[in-house]
Image (cartoon, rainbow, N blue to C red; front, side, top):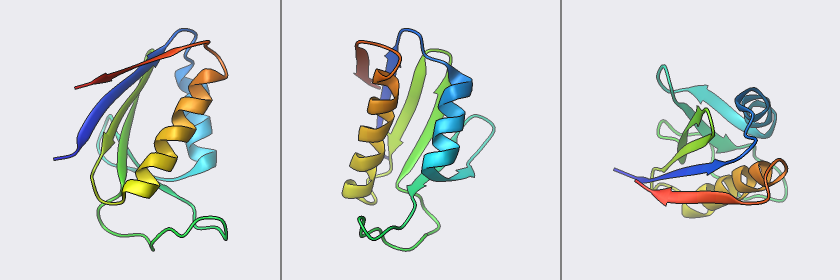
Length: 100
């Protein structure tokens, strides 16, 4: 079991969020409501090759993200979390983070 969080904020656009996620991360459908995310390997990141269990699952909800860190790769999960927060701050002055 991983660490589950809900990120929420005003003016969240689920369609824009999906487009951001698809452009920024390696995305695979996990189930009907969740996506698995991993960073693209670049020279700046030392990310391990793709594995069967992704570092993060997310769900795109009406006012934010459901985020589940699978406790697989702390560095990669932290970078994904940071980028999701930065995306949310482009449309809202504050975001709320709640542990589930």
